[in-house]
Every structure is written in structure tokens, then in C-alpha cells.
Image 1 (tube, rainbow, N blue to C red):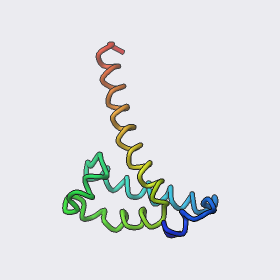
Image 2: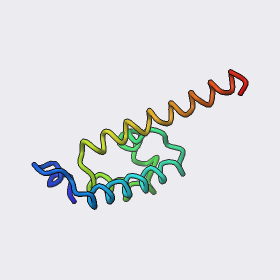
Image 3: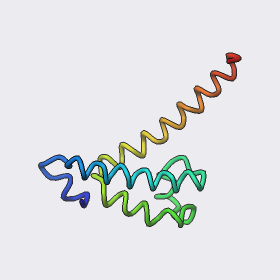
Image 4: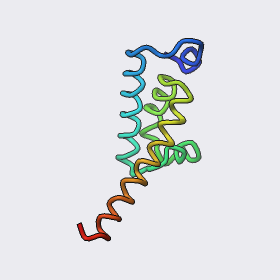
Amino acid sequence: MSAASAEGSKPPTRQERKVCWKLRDEYFSCLDRLNILDPATVDKDPSKAQTCLDSKQKYEDGCMASWVEYFNKRRVIDIQQKKYLEFSEKMSGK
């Protein structure tokens, strides 16, 4: 599924969504291995994630652009929330 065809009039099928989620997970796993929190880092400086560029391209080609934008922002928010909760638990003595 290309991003251009997916953003047409019909929503992605269940199978297309599954493929998108799989590609997202593969790309984010690659970023995790390199300790890269924000996918925007790769856009600004691709040399920081050379090993992830192929999975990034597949992710962007396999998902609608609006989904890629949402998933990338959600990744940053989720990691920040997790860190905050860990800090909060540590400070409360749990």
C-alpha cells in the first residue's frame, strides 16, 4: 500500500493496517537499538540512523502519511510519560 493510494477516499483494510503496524514496530525497534527517542532526529540527520533508513522508508511507504505523523508523535509522548511515571514512583517511594 503506498501512502498516496491509502490517503484516497477509502480507509485502509484490516490487512493494510496490520502491515502498517508491523512496519512501524520494526522501524521503532531499530530506533530503540540506537537509543533514538524522536523519529524526527532521523529526518534532521540521517547519518545517526543509517541502519534504520531502509525500515524507515518501508514504514513511510506502507502507512498513510497522517498515520506516520501520529505514530511518530505518539512514540515521543509515550516514552516521556513512561519516564515521568518512573520518576514519580521513585519520588513517592513505591
